[in-house]
Image (cartoon, rainbow, N blue to C red):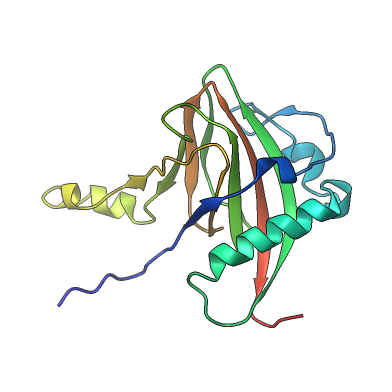
Length: 182
């Protein structure tokens, strides 16, 4: 018998990027990578000052539908924050997590022909690397080939990064999850 331990689901689905209407904010060099992002200008703002109400409703419905593929109990999700990233001139994003949230998402507005450059890192990759005889049996990372008009939803604790790219425009954000419905 084989049993997979410690499963970490990620959810990939389609999304109409034209229905995600963010208000205009300045793009600034952000993080160690100096990627152009609205993160610094939108992160601590009231969500209604960042995104149109119709967009919030559409986005939360889309994300809830993805979660319902795995979660059978009733739940409530709330959009905590949202921002845009523009990758050009071999921009990248160093490995990171999204603290103080339950799930995070990436919407792919523009991507290279071979898909988005997001890589999810195996939480045990450092331990796996230390076992030289079996490390080839386990993946250290996973790169979903998400295309324009797709969204990926994942637990916020899952470390991820963006490989160097010169043609990617994403919308990222965080949600809270509550098993009590409101």
